[in-house]
Length: 295
Image 1 (spheres, rainbow, N blue to C red):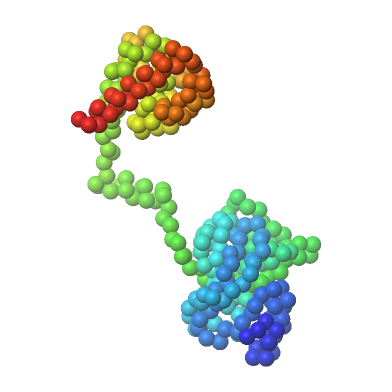
Image 2 (image 1 turned 30 degrees about the vertical axis):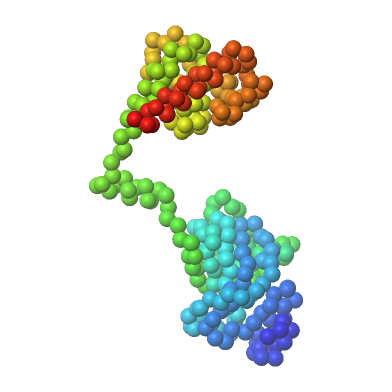
């Protein structure tokens, strides 16, 4: 049915269909169970335009929900309605109606945008659009804001259900099979590398070459200077040149910020013999790591 062809539409719906058509929508009479899905997203946050409407996809709805009012579905995005059970990506089944009751979850147009909110009437008769997330503020409906109720959400479908990380973690920890993995062996191997390369280190800052080599071989994690320094102090407490976290951080500049294979003497914090010393320490560390992996 073309947007302006309302011959088959009941008299009581023609005004609604005409209004939707003037807004750029393509209303269709749903006299069977399949209901069109509008290929759009409606924000659960700051109002935004709904966009073009297509009817290439159809959702099957209970026949009891198909009334004289038009039914359609929209995809929600944003997090302002999470407290009402509406998450990003959910599919909303909407009954087209300009009337809302206190407590309804509605699709509202505000100027040229649309949003999903709860409809609330306070003790003084004022009407509000209320989010279900305290990060966002309620909006008082006033004539200046040009708010119109476009529809009422009648059901929510989870197209991409997700579990809460906290709930999953708590369930796993409570499981009788859960044990804390023994990571000491990895620590012991790392200490072994430190002790082998320690005699090559003649200045505290040269420990940066060991840190960078271990980072390249994924023995330690990015920006773990403090943990690395603590490990060196535990591994070789009598060493004459123990590292300091702040000094190691200062060495991570220029080409030294990159993998050892990409170090460039013309773009490094040290040069000449000092550069060669850092490079030799780093390469020796990587060789020790390689040997341990092949044993």
